Image 1: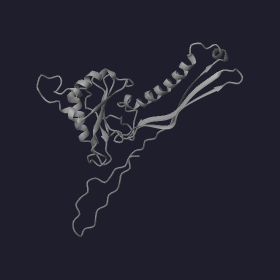
Image 2: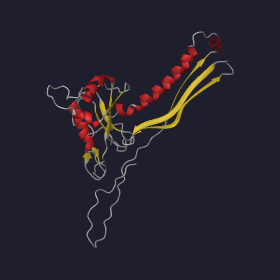
Image 3: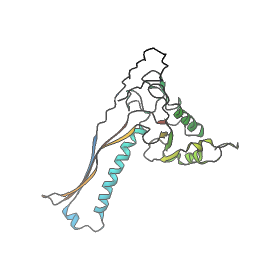
Image 4: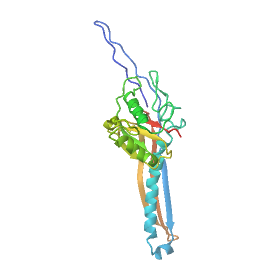
Length: 254
């Protein structure tokens, strides 16, 4: 649940009673845990005749399926970051929006007015936006960007922007000032948009979450009637976001 604070403390004149203020309650975000599971079975005869370690590979494949499940559904947060139907605490607002409503009035944008491809200028604008992020009371939140999250398609462009000693893509002998921001890079093939990119704060300064109810559990057993061996994997978790602060994103121009 989101709540406001109290804003900037006003002056108090001598002999005058102190003023009071009230916190404002905002929206709520509900997380509903989802069960994910998969199983396979092997006949008794196949177990007896096994020659090529296929069943060992099957067990490994089941574990891999479970790991990929977590990645795919966790990345929904970013893959749906510009979809107004996928919301956090505030109904009708996507994770990255040009008009996040503040409880004490006003709005704030954590995406460009017109989406742009990753570039030095675009990244500088994102860093500047981080410096101006405000809380629900329009006071500066003082959140620092730490990580640039990109799909593999932007790997080399990100290296050129963040790694160049001089300002990239120009003949001018200017210092590449973005290097002083100490921004790291995370590349993820699970991002479905080849041109989307995100600038994120460090852990604890954003509200993108994967909540676990039950970590992965692998079980194996024998079917008494058929003699088949059965293997299953079950896990229960949910992903989502509450507050939008701590992330800035663009879906790119294409």
